[in-house]
Image (cartoon, rainbow, N blue to C red; front, side, top):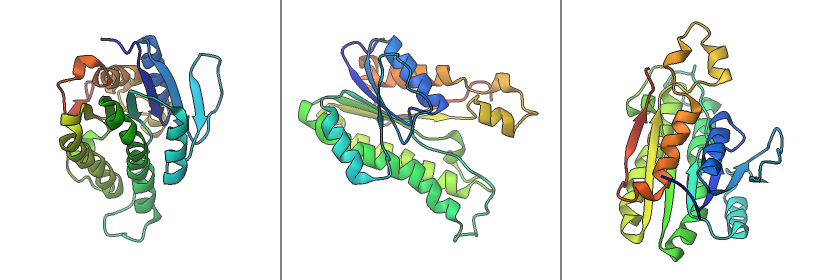
Length: 224
């Protein structure tokens, strides 16, 4: 499996998982473009980084047009929050979860798909969530948003798979990040999914080795 000769675009590239996907894609031979609303640093690692608010549909479309040919889109941008109950429908958390998880994914797909269809080939990998396979207490906004991403993945795959475009998603459980360790200090971190291990699965789905896989929602749960 490799990504040689492919231009890979990674959204949410400043986050822990985004950085892991950038590094793994580059290690597999891809030319990598990272997108995020800001970057903590701009290391000289050969990765092209572009600042972009993915919730802005027109700005996303304009930037993708300027990026030129691409072959793989890894929609890593997203976020998690819990604490509100399902009946608190006026909570700003509901809108925030859909904005950061659904709108970012939809806008990137909207911008990339014409390029993929024109060239007759492309791969998209979205990020769902194991917890969104069913409702969870005090996680309704997050579960609802991620379930939309999962259904979008399946629907889009059925629309474009015969046109040379693979669309799949990974469903991680808890990812081993500094923030998660801080929020759950008593947990057994060794059971969580390592960002690089998740990045390996994501990159596999973007490679030609996964050309026969369409509309899959692949659990990546480590030992949790």
